Amino acid sequence: MRIDFHTHGKLAKQLPFSTVYTDWLFAQAKSAGLDAICLTEHFNTLQFDELYRYIASVSRRAGDCLELENGLRIFPGMETDVAECGHILSVGPLEAILELNRRLAPYKAKGSFLPFAQLMDLFDQYPVTVGCGHPFRAPGHVPEQPVEQLKRLSFLDLNGKDIALDRARTERLTYALAEKLELPVISGSDTHQAVQYGCISTVLERDCTTFDEIFSQVRAGAYRIEVAQQAAFQVQTASLLKRALKEIHALGGDYVSILTAKTVV
Image 1 (cartoon, one colour):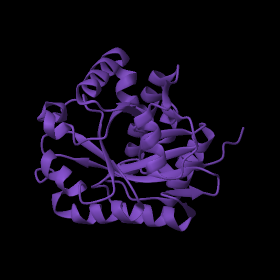
Image 2: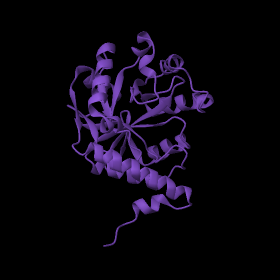
Image 3: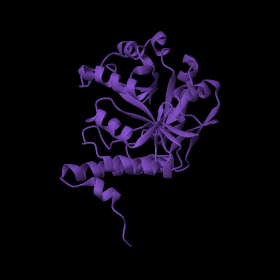
Image 4: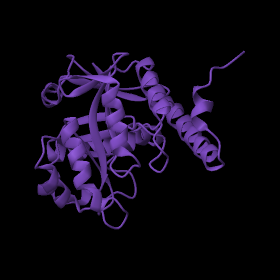
């Protein structure tokens, strides 16, 4: 099963949720060869609940995942900022993710993020698996936290954006920290739109519908990480496209219609 452990369902946190855009994203994910994604949407994105309610309404529940009509499996998750600067990924059953997001409501504004240790205390109360997203991306300081706190994590994210920028540094630092903490490394594209899907992915040996099935394979090393030859180009193109689409929205244009319009030759 080919899975992307770090993805988003919106173009940007402050933009309104669009069902059309999200449908387009998930269709593109399947076209890019993915069997599954972890939807690690930003915890403080606008309309977080609406995004997940919509996905639940157009999918069928299979274990822990939400399976779309096209066969793509969506495993619920969330990306949360911490006070020390850095992003923490949590994945788990939909109900747990939604309740956690509600409990984090007082801590969603910059300046009020929870410290790493307190966030982990909260996560410990729920059936979620927690890892660090792009641990060495500036200005994050998660790797500088006490080792006994970092060992509460269950995985590290080998991030497509960082791989595209400097693969050697990203792999060296991420795997060194993983060895120190005795944690597995899994991969995520960190995409907010379709061009970036497939720049990096994790291939599990067996098909999965539950987090227990996924992470039993991860802990056993029954997977491989694949980086696309064109990963750097994909990420650079995605960054330019995201910037252009946000500018279209700021000027009052409809970036969703532009993306989804059928091209006439």
